[in-house]
Length: 134
Image (tube, rainbow, N blue to C red; front, side, top):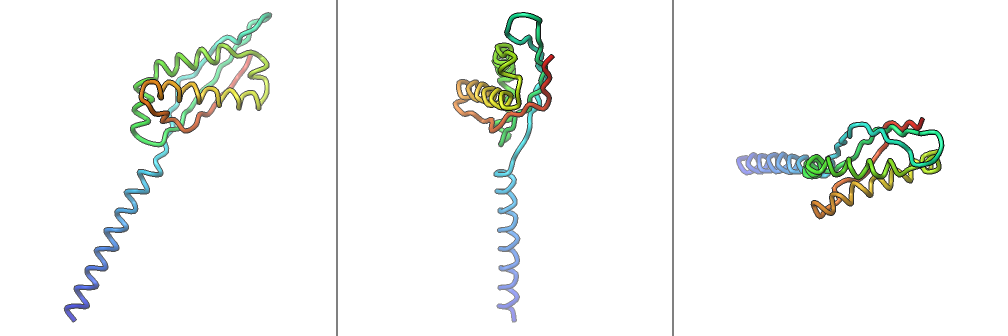
């Protein structure tokens, strides 16, 4: 009887321990966070009537260290994104396909900054949460 009780206790605690370890690993692997950048307003490149682009950008990171790295280098990230956005024209922002291409270029700009500064890209995706051309 004592052996069965001891075995039952060992099994119960090992299941509890395995379950707790599984939860810890899951939270580390499944960490997803979004960082909203302040909105961007730039002139579009081109001749003729002045055109403006106003957009909001959100970037996706997958760890707390990535979140800290992005925040630490935010001024340079914003600077490089401003240069990218201000070099656009009606053709490069006029269609959904063009905007998707621009989002990929913007993601690469952010990743390049982080690779240069931190030796790791950290950012897994970039989204335009608002995009207005006027």
